[in-house]
Length: 489
Length: 112
Image 1 (cartoon, rainbow over the protein chains, first blue to last red):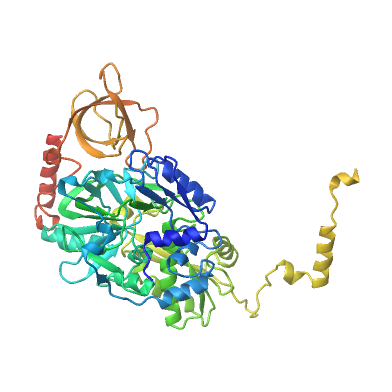
Image 2: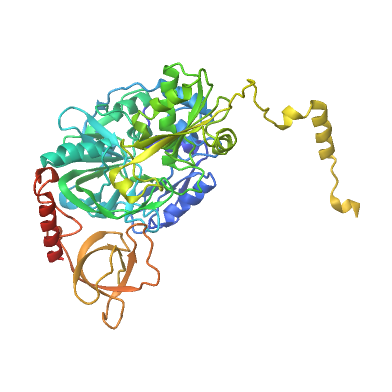
């Protein structure tokens, strides 16, 4: 069944996890503060429908995909028509089965809800929409949940990607495109090198699988929208943009059309990013000139509070957990590796991949690590950790315990030297030179149980394993009959 | 009266007019303007508060109270910085890369 953002919200509402806020809320920090508090308590999704200075009905949707401590992937499972209580391994298995592209279909603009309101040229004003000001100290009002659509000028390939953007003026956006990312490569190496403007559309809302697919590191030449169709199990409906030849999701909430001109820059940043820090510097970055905005009646802008580190999860940290995990789980299964689980714990978004695995032969970990770091998704995580097959890779506390207890400080931390691959420049440890040159390193950690020379290691202790059943029963009976201290007085 | 913010990596100028990027705190619109700034209210009667943020982390500079008078909001065509349109792509500057970059920098400084 097709599903757009509104269908998804209906499903979340059926679970009792959507709250509508009709009290006036300020888009300037207040909506984001409420969203952060809800994240900290694994609260409901909040839809703000009465925003200061905006017509009733223009909405901000806070954290549509954040989850719970136990199941950060829960709401995204609902978005993919799975059971809300599905476990992580089954979620990944189901996800892997859907990694098959289905080409989109095209519908007439007359049948496209995203064309209910059309503003072109002088009528364009980005400030007609309630973009949130998310963190005190951000360089402007930011959008964080959308996809940016750009076409390769030399082929039919259309890239769908998700990068933040900042609202500058009524018709201008700042786009922090970074070398190594696919949209950035199209712009810097093709359009700008030929002194041509790059036509761009930004789609906000629509089928949640589009947002998911646009964050996935498929290789150049692969259109993410095909995989969004695969995740949904049927083609995604697209319609033609008003002012360029790109196609956009027909049921998007908002579509922004325009171009990124060659050699044009405007200051962008800082912004509170997913790693949990406000990152600058504010510096010149490419600019999108907006030629048209189309949207549904009563449009809503989904947003995420990236970087709020004390949160259970955010919509993007969930995505940052699902994407690499699903891809590596699929890769490992396809290769017949004895992997029982893969995850990026949501409190370490995009930072460490954890793999639960048996060790079938000596040297296995080294071979797998090098394979994984050769795949494009590692533009983000620099750490890879192997744990025993029975360890839950989604549980950050368990993983940390495995590292500090089982990884040998000298022998089990393996650095790969200077790594000059594409790299997101947001890690806090990077100095200015490394940020500019996108240099880093990669480390993998063997936190699996080591066999001692005798072939046997120490025995793990827990309540069940070191106390016989009769002792446990008596202990529990004594605990039940404990007396309050005041009775002794 | 609207209040403004700016991100600035250097000391702001006092007295003479100059061009700077401002952010309207009410709408968060970002624009270039020709302004006069000062820390002394007597120097700029009728001015409004300017919050100066660190361009690396977004922090407000401690104990820095600035005032601003907007003399003119600049059209994009009048703007020299930060919208910098490089005159020649880098790959086409072989043999005169440093000289051309230096010349452009001097031109920008003259305009500012």
